[in-house]
Image (cartoon, rainbow, N blue to C red; front, side):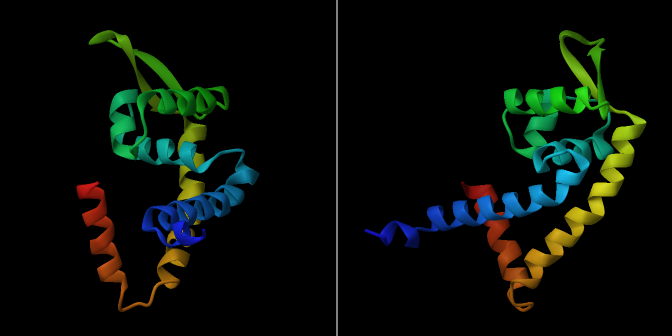
Length: 139
């Protein structure tokens, strides 16, 4: 019963896991995961954001982002400050070390993104991009 391997949901999941494994292996030397990098990248554009806002943008739930932020904080890459507008929440700020780390990781992520694009026939890239957007908006 190997028909499940033909299911798109299985294939997409398998491809995603493969991409994550390979991408994470590139980040091992930095002591960081891809998930943590997405928090850093988000903070480059939205420094001082709350957990819930970061979670929405990187498409993880708040508890998962809290765990990522905890680990980044222990590494000295981000700091938490109390949100003056809401005592129950915190704002997350990049430290200088975190900003530097994000800047080092961006080219690696860009290279990996290009590697994925290169695996797709150049004529099919716009179709693939459109399909990704359609999936994101409709699932």
